[in-house]
Image 1: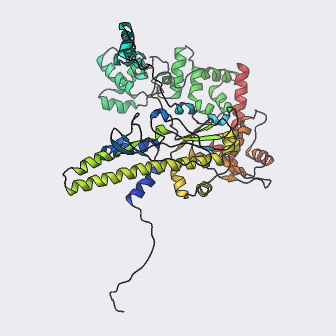
Image 2: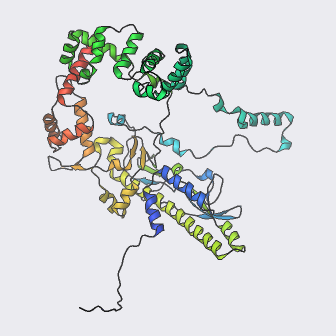
Image 3: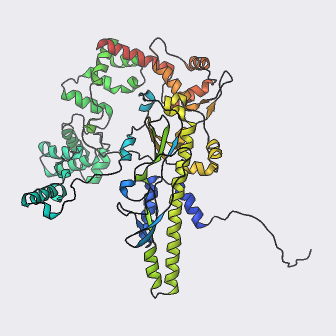
Length: 542
């Protein structure tokens, strides 16, 4: 076989992932926080980019001045965003921001009743707070000639009251006292020597928000160069501080410290606290044998334990958890349809300063500098286009989700329909991977709470009567409803739940019921029966 060299011409098609296309795809799956961080980096790197501020005039996608930035309604499919260019003080700049909302013609109920599923880690929200559009001017325009001395003094007084930094209202708000600050103020009352205060300060720094301290006395003694007995003595003194139960190492020790404070700690209740694991298992028979008392005394001790605080440190201020900021708002319109709007607060608004580019390019500069400026201009234009396309895509996907799940927004989770990415992608003529990226880390705010967009994509469970399939999330909700309605005498096993669901037209296997029940952290029928019986006994004692 001989090797020869020859030339051939072939025609083929292939998808080339340019850096700009990769950036556009990456922007789709970013959350609003990650997107703002990315834009901040681009603003620092690119001299032709600048952030749009209120009062920039033309260049806003929503139509000009901030006063005109109120939400507009639109029937049918939204046209999305439009990237306009305009002049502001001679600067020609392009912008990217939020666009007009879209409205869906789906029926909406006039009232939304609270339901149990809203308590399952769904953050309530007030969508109306995001639609405040304008702040009215407090002082009318008045010429100096129209005011006397008293008039100017009154205006000056008002400006001083509201504009002076020394009269900031936040300065009058009391600082929230933290647990560690509260403990540090009490520590000198129980620790006298400098060595004890050094150990005490170290232990205070180890206290968590709940008031517990996880420490190995031997290791801490080696680290501080002292004896474990001395650290134990300091810890014992610190356990007498307020709030009662602080500096405990276990739950039993925390409850024991509070009972000692109330002068209710005795050998019987000490045995009870040593066997709390039996109470967690609802093994009342084993708890009776371990403590050596009858069931009535066990019930009395359980009732007393219920009045204690297992996490005493939480009564003091702690770091606030940042709530989820929704990307899309859904609210009922006056005509009974649904209004879908983008949250403009989560969409960064950037401008391309073309006048600066023209000015710098016209000056005498090297070809290298001109090439750099041209690259910055292309990058800035592509970023504006990518942000605009991202906002359009999010709005289109959210509109289709609301259209598909209108029963959920109207009647609740029991009317959630099975939905997959392919259905939404075919409806809006996009690829499934695009829909998957758009729904990642994006949240929707509605009168029923804040939900991730992926929450609305659920698997289907067949109907037992050849009817419409049921959503797995709706089946979970139905299982929880059945279990919540149980009493101590009507506890249902998984097989009984399967039979009840079949009467409701849901064809489901027992193992699937068990899987959904365990995912919702609902115990078995045996454990639920013990809990109900114990709760009834405690209620009778009360």
